[in-house]
Length: 494
Image (cartoon, rainbow, N blue to C red; front, side, top):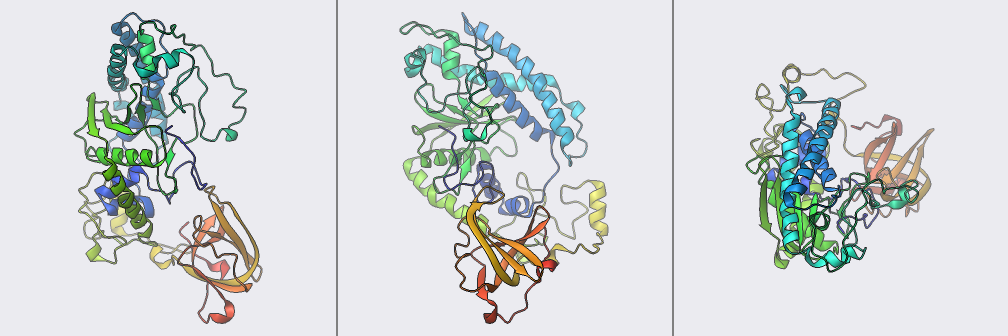
């Protein structure tokens, strides 16, 4: 239900051509922040909180995947679940330490030794307690509308909730070796009562369990817009009572710097759900904050609002795709240089690290440690074969002879694109569409000796490559008097 494959091919994972919830919320906070981080590629030092959010969410999901035996009371069920929280907290802490040690750039004065396993256990417990509220409600409704279907051995949903002992569902199962030959049963069998019996606490846990990203599935578990330009990955989907409620898990609290982005994130997910033909309509949206054990609820968008979002999100995606290319100048404010976007900020928005950096405030601005800051202030001497980004053209004209063509075939993002080969002297270079459908006329030149104008230079596996899009053009050499760049002298940022 909440997972699929791209309708036009391409990667299951993130793609530069798709709008995502994180990209949307970053853009809404500050377009310049989105541009600098997503398109220019400026990063900021990692925080312990970022690592914590990832490993604690996974740990909570692993707890929910467990299948309780016969339980006589909520207290007994809670005690059983708390023991699992203790085990998973230690695993999460170890995973977090490994992930932290692997980070190349960390915030100053951040030390993993300050992270306490007990804090992780408390966060996971808080998530379990929020889930147990659902279990209790399910128990009080005698299992809800699907209890007899579960007891008959079938699931009411196309994609069942992940559970230990059940076979995981992979979006692309043919890519998983020996999937059918694997034994997933382990020691987690579950026995349902006969139909018509009063609900038991362990059954309420099983029925109330939400859908979430199965930790056994290494493939991204995303929804994809039917036109291919948007995708999103949900945290939880509650559906035991016949109402669809989407939940986003936050490891912090509702007063955090990024809290205002939660509603925008959930709106995007609700819109995407409605446009992907999923089962049922979104009835409600929630954020679960694990530090403070808060459940923040929002009304689902109306049909009128969903229709408005079609235009809103499409236009935002188009604005993102049109944001400049090439070297980006600092400072960030558009009126101070030739801006690559429409807006900037003072650097005060949540997540903004580079937005306000300028040559006259390097001593205080930007997420830099003392060594990096001093290097920036003193300046860096660039020596051949390197050159400043600003001196490297983002588009080039290249002449040669077209000697081969292919496609559509998958590129290195697994997107179906057209390709060709050009030769100039003894040098050859591959040419590809920048993305599917970006240059559908690649194979239509009546001449073989041509000039490709406004091509994007790049590198793939240490080999130069040219990418063409809607700004590119192929003309006969006889029709072009302008100088072109030799294949062997192409410069690139890649």
